[in-house]
Length: 252
Ligand code: GLN
Image 1: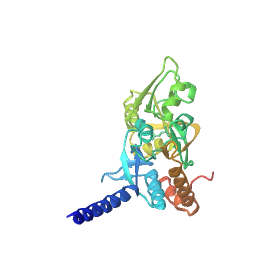
Image 2: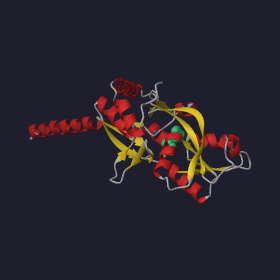
Image 3: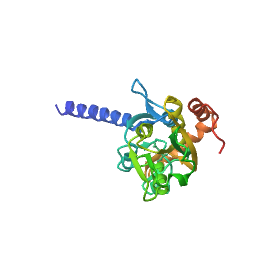
Image 4: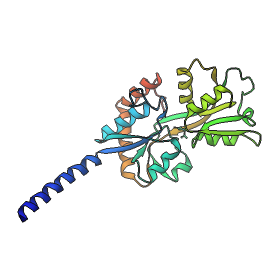
């Protein structure tokens, strides 16, 4: 009887061990899948986009598979901090204030901001023209921080969970402008060319996207950076960039 028990215990421990190993080869990655062509969910419910392909390739290089998790952009940093997700990739700009809360990989993408207005708008031509306007932004983004700096007491910033919601309110005239990352804004306008909206001008913020991990998780950052460097040198990064943006990545 005692032997049987010991045998069962050993088998049990092996099973638990295998299970544990399986989860440790899975990386849970959070993203706000409302930011095409970087991340969105297609009609079949799959996560798609440049960030998705890049993170899948990074994980593969590391011997991991990704378990994708969708979340509002504004909640992503906290979810990495609490360990809900191992990492976040979400067109997230590396900023000094976020660096106080999470650690970032090496930058993998450069971006600016764009100011989108209605085609009929002839008054918004420069940043100063936004001071007294109603500006839509995605909550918790660098676009929001910038818009708050641009408005004065007569202007107002309206926050949305996703950039699309802001664009739709711009279309109906509830907003005068939307401030949002340039590649995502251009993509939205291209895909919704029936909407009478256009980019009035860019704001060259020179932002760099990074993959966020829990503060102090240097092991994971090192592995991600190594994989990213390999994907850059073997041409895989350029291939992915070209497939989503239709051009060669900029040389940095
Ligand atoms: N790059 C912007 C930021 O980091 C917007 C990101 C996003 O909306 N996914 O705040």
